[in-house]
Image (tube, rainbow, N blue to C red; front, side, top):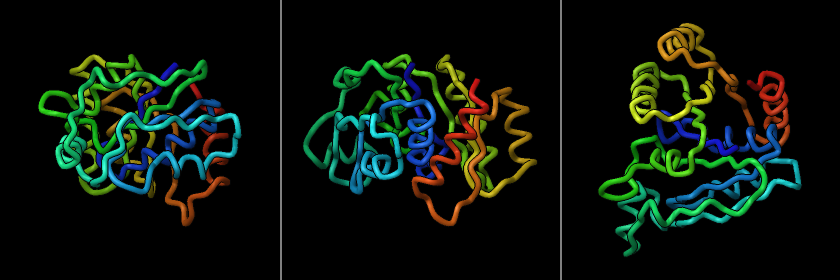
Length: 202
């Protein structure tokens, strides 16, 4: 099974969640589009402990930290949905998106179109801040309008029980994991949450 990790904003915590899912599911990792350094694939590589996890090379590495459509234009290249081919792997694959789900790849396609392209189940990462209810519900409506299969939500950051409750109420999605605000993100943190994810996996 392939899982597409998307977020309600650029800094939702997709890379941390990707590392946790790789560790928990014994899955490989792939970020199809990387805009700017440092590479998220390098971060995942540093955070996972399982030596069997393969980190696949990006289909596109763009030099500028910007929306892929703009970064690609600066690099003098074009990105088409047909350019993306799933890496050869017999294992589950964690696919990390770039930014939020409606970040443009080109004049027509968005990052979330990669989830449909690969027929991947979507995991929605919601960091909790003032305004996150609105952003989470708008993102969920977009996923629903595209008839994508959403596995569930991961809440990331300082707990806000009322925000979490109302989001789950309106989306009817399961909460797959709650990640606290950690002082330091390292292998031990990833192991801790991977154990929690495995114990609650649906």
